[in-house]
Image 1 (tube, rainbow, N blue to C red):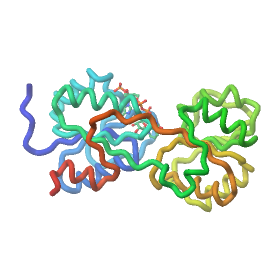
Image 2 (tube, rainbow, N blue to C red):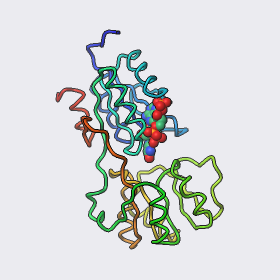
Image 3 (cartoon, rainbow, N blue to C red):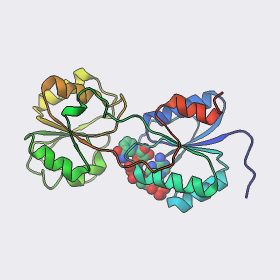
Length: 253
Ligand code: NAP
């Protein structure tokens, strides 16, 4: 087995604003940082430090990369809904004996309006719940979730917001908005109002970056359907902000 270097070599498994913030903070401290991106977005916002793009090839591929690169710390800062990558990072780091931290922003369950939203497990349930709440849904659950909505809602006036165009054709009744945030309440209110959206669907992504839509819904009286997060694996050291992750990597320095 290769010697682990004395200077921390950090792998940030990324694809989130928090992961970019963390990489910038660690690079500024002089650490050797590599951020990993899945490669889903054609022109991603690139983090500071080294960047690698594309899947590792499952748990075995990540295990091999951990050995080859000599990463001493892994911070899984992927999106709360990137459950496969989280599971792979945990399994690979555990098998290679590399310390792993999960950085996951808090969800929106503490939002003042959370009690008035409809919380569901999964996108089929979200679609069913929203069908009973409105006629003109605003869909903000992401490109990968579209198979749950495309067919059943082909005739609905759906407003869908995506970071990138979907390669599959979308129903002609749908209105597509391409944007990647961050968003503000005035912009979100205007968007929902122009579309005459009467129900909003979101994942419990959490954080401030995309939360303005929730305040816009309150202002407009638009009901919200929220898909709960996938379960977090047991026994993982977890922090919910970048400061905590910096402390973990630097040993509190
Ligand atoms: P996922 O379903 O959990 O992962 C599927 C596979 O994609 C993984 O097994 C891995 O392939 C590869 N992968 C995912 N994230 C990676 C990363 N950061 N670096 C290298 N490979 C990665 O992931 P997902 O939900 O499609 O999310 C993909 C990326 O988009 C993540 O980086 C995530 O942080 C970001 N993102 C996701 C969402 C969301 O709602 N899911 C929202 C915003 C941003 P291998 O098995 O080949 O290693």
